[in-house]
Image (cartoon, rainbow, N blue to C red; front, side, top):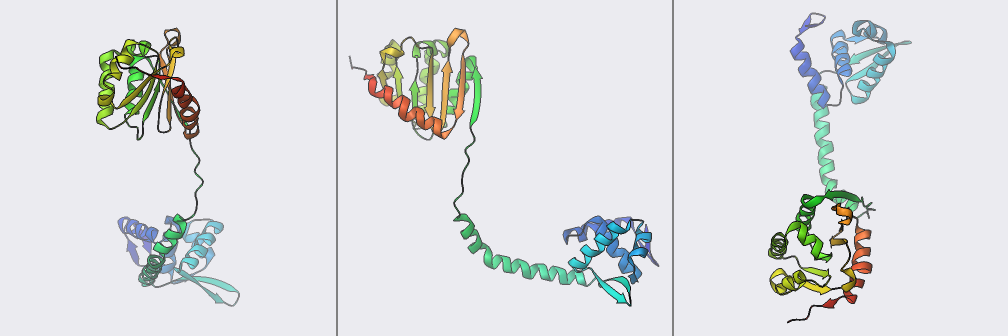
Length: 270
């Protein structure tokens, strides 16, 4: 127990006092100082140091903070300085003051919020890079592409890719994508699979073109929203590097894919 003159304060009660005063902006040292001054009636900094067993600098600092917060006040007797505590009723006045302050804030908050929201914000784009490997990695990439908000652009050697995943898996991907309402433009080299999915282009919501110079490539890319997924199958090391960057996606969409799209030829119906 803590003893202040004839008053005994249980440790549990002191903890409750500390917790309450903390909510009013006082730390533990300030709470102990306030209670000590309150029990003493009036006291000096020197006496406080002895009672609290703390150095003069820290006690002086706590006293100044409590004066500013309205818990203590200063008394001058000649050249001597004494400290006294406000009556505990000051707690209610402090809370009433907080209510008044909050009401004032509530009055202004909508207007100030409107002003702050109108300030132009410079957005710094962060580039995110992910590396996926082997068959499972390619499947993860395809799963992420199904989150696309706009069309998916595909430039790929389908022969190599479908051998890895299987034509059935790949066709299911096109079906899932179509169910989500996502369209695609696809550039493949001439091959049977290109003809096969082109026959279902309305079902899969795709537009397929062929490009002969893409036939020997072991690389390719998928592009959607701000994400570029670059595939590499070179030297039997299957990997997919996903780059989330608005500028890079814009460059590949408008300068790379669209260029090859104009060069590619639609598949003739047989």
